[in-house]
Image 1 (tube, rainbow, N blue to C red):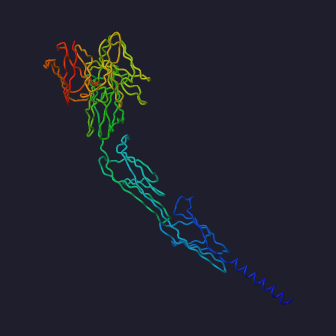
Image 2: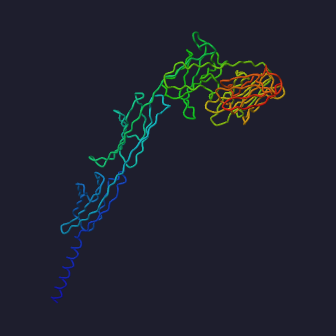
Image 3: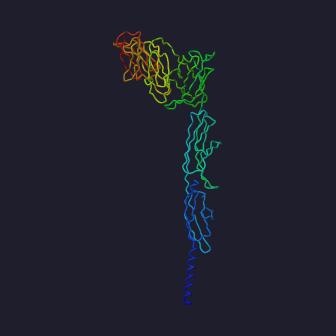
Length: 475
């Protein structure tokens, strides 16, 4: 019996010893992940997964720093591979584990810029950045001026035609003493700006000078950008007949001048472009490569010779393509001698009308700055006012044909030609007359005077870059 009791006691003691040894054995293990809530890939959150009765924890992050926290958060100081060690222990045992942590912050930076050509402040540039990778700060440097924490910005430079350097830096902060900086520098040359002005003439007289004429006006400046006309400035002038645009970018421009509704001569003169025309596509282009102060404009005057009894009503789509931005275009009525008879404005539906017209031939054209238009021949008689289409084909178009004292000719080969010569020839090949033109009518037609020509079949021989002929019947 004593032996049995002794054996049972030894078993209990030995079992207790085995259980105690199991409880005090440490097994080190950990996991890690990027601390997403901080938004920084170099901040790693560690999770202690060790097993056993642990009384002490020691972390070595492989960068010279350590921690005794159970689940630490660590800021790695730079890109690289780090051997992270976790050691756990108690009074009877210890264990450790090492894992490789790779920190790789990829960062690149670039920027583009363009001149803000519509800004009223000269040499204002728009800057846009492209940053790939995480960053904490962006810094723009414009010489001594620094702009921080904006991805895109604008900056105005003081000097014209001057070279500047702009630097953009992207900064990623690892910790209080370590940063990753990526920077790029680019050079730019500022533009030149000039002044543009001119006098406004009403006939041979300068508007409001030397005596007030009771006129006020508006001048609009359009810059030519490739195939677009961009309005860049508006000048209201009241006392002197002079328009003025200050410090404009070196470029090509058109100027459009209108007298206001209540101007003293507002009902007598049409809106006129530089080059003294009512049509924007015939306007004189101003090459602003230096200051220009005498780009004078002679306003186109209406003849107001309407004493007839006939009316004409039309729609703007007879003269130009209708689009969303087509709002109240001007409609002009010319006679065959390139004199402006009258003008009106199409209403919101595109309708327009002219009243008190005499029997005869007219030319209709429209103008809306920047939109192409097409001219139409208008034949007014007592029976049927009508628009006659002047479509251009491979041969010349003559109207009217038969003709009496004159005819109008519109030809694809001579359209927009600077110098055109037209000979009038009879059927025997004799040259009866010759007329030369430096430009066409405002509407694109050439008027051929036949008042001194014999009646019968005549040949019009047109000389441009090539020669072509068309027959007419002169009655």
